[in-house]
Amino acid sequence: MALIKCPHCQHDNVSDKAETCPHCGLRITQFCKGKSQNACYDEIISNNLSEVEAKRERILLMLKQQKNKEIKYKIGWFAWAITWTIILVLVFSLSEHGSHGLLIVISLFFSIIGWGGIYLCRGSVEQFENDLRLAEKDIAEYERTIQRRIEAHKQKMIEGANALQREKEYAEYTQTSGEAWTVRYFTDPCPYCGHYKVRYSKWEDKRFSIAFWGIASSKIGQKFKCENCKRMW
Image 1 (cartoon, helix red, strand yellow):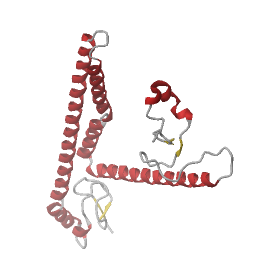
Image 2 (spheres, helix red, strand yellow):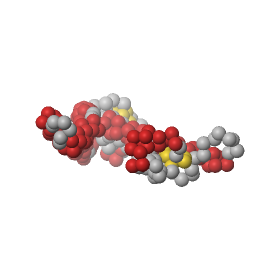
Image 3 (cartoon, helix red, strand yellow):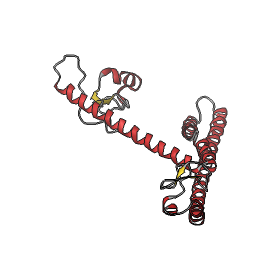
Image 4 (cartoon, one colour):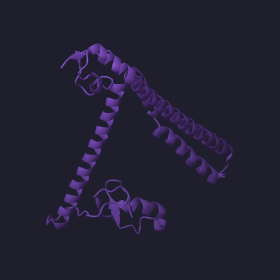
């Protein structure tokens, strides 16, 4: 085994037996086997550098397109929010003694949606800018960063599945527990969030709605409540 300098990223101590350069991803093994370092370099440069550069350009183009798309989304949400906020202010200023009440509610609703969309898009453009700078500087490090994100997401999904399994096991335990004050959870998941925190609804869950709306309250006939998402049905 010989240690060579990668002809693409110029990092030292790369094994000529390695499949790829650990720093930039350049393919090495198939071009270096049984050849001198100079011959190895010639083979790699003639066959492989164009592939690495093409891959780098594809990634950079993809990131630029995604960044531009996010910018368009933000501009759209901002224009929506500003437009409905202006309408809200104008209608409110022209309203007298509760007139235009319905239009005020509608414009308030749509302006809240617009500002909410801006909030949900926060940080997305900055993330693409950071990824773009990293990919321009070191494409191999960018790919490792993306792989770490994928692994972190997988781990989060596994942890979430394990937490749901523990919730289900506890719900099954509460159905058979003889303890007087144990809250009985159902073994069927919440139809809204999928958690096993479903129990019978109580008067405390409904009293404010009933006190405000009276018999028109939608919670009067609702029998179940999820303690995770707080939804009732």
